[in-house]
Image (cartoon, rainbow, N blue to C red; front, side):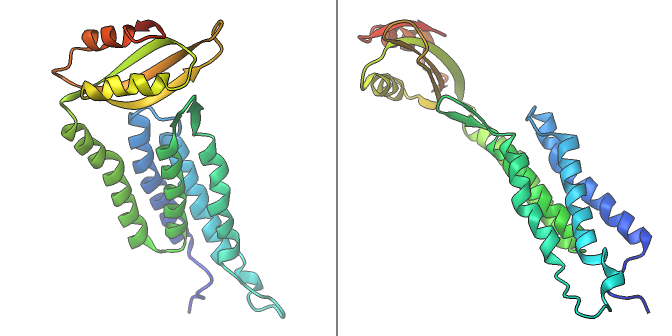
Length: 227
């Protein structure tokens, strides 16, 4: 009778293959949308997590019957959950007030959990989590684009005098035009008291961007506006 603490080689290979496949599915979505951690990274994270779980549960079978041996199959694999944070942090980029890469960091964290689940033999949970992750990353993204398809994204570069309330005043102009400020970057390395502001705004199709830019240009303290 086979011990519960050992696996045949074919099942080890099967679990590693499934872990790579599920991680690759999530990674392909990230790769296709040009995110920093893509296809290969997600496969490696999922494979590594599955291997660590396999080692944690089945790698010490020869010592199970030894005297005074205390076995905790979750101890080694638990380090993956915290350790993956260092890799995820490398995908997060901050530019001024905007932060990108959070979704990719989260997908790496989810993929590591998928790999651990496959390594432990919890295939149903791993497959379902992968499916839900793909729905979240792909289908919900498309649904969002459909719901806001009548709005277009634009980027405005402004040179503005650095004084309190100026950004709020410009944001109010955008809001009154029916727009929404999605990202805001500030570069205060310019000359004198001026700062450069990069606004990413979403506007309804019927709003004339040139007219909005003219209204912003007419605001006191705004030196220049470039679309």
